[in-house]
Length: 66
Image (cartoon, rainbow, N blue to C red):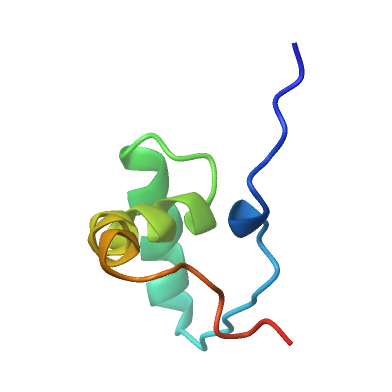
């Protein structure tokens, strides 16, 4: 069975952050220690609970959408 994705779940926004080499290493290390395949997946979980609360109180639309 194929599950269709919710259009709100499409990742169409990009955040670029400059970090030091040490910070970069720490992000990768912590992501893998916590069982995430990528730093992106790890970072998404840091705001996951806040996003769930926010969705309950307003319609969800990406700010970067044109």
